[in-house]
Image 1 (cartoon, rainbow, N blue to C red):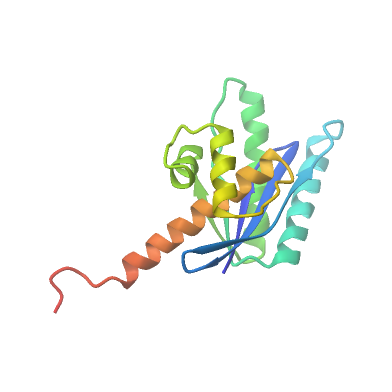
Image 2: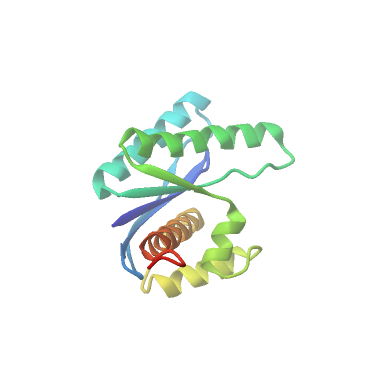
Length: 169
């Protein structure tokens, strides 16, 4: 199974694709879709959408995951990030791919073991779990962490479904 992780951003949208085989993970690809800050918002969102659709067409993921938006002090910035996040949810949904959503702390907790881990710690653990990976950008590294988080949650769900109920004969 292939999992696409997406780190939404209006200027830089990171993406990463991993292949999952049981508990084994393998890096497939990662990159960053850039939009031009000089363009109007609609044009920037269009660039992000088309770029993400191209990634989906190229790598044909089975599942996708997006990081949830955190609220910061700048309401306008939060709103714009939310619109980029909408694109990150829309592109896989349009391709018929189910999309998981994870809070930043949940991603860090799953990948590093600590919910308030620093970016460097997350990148280090992604490198350990995906040997030989070279990040296109910090945003792409975050996207790979999101993909890893989603794959681990899918594995947990599969284990719960496969295990027999207590007291069943």
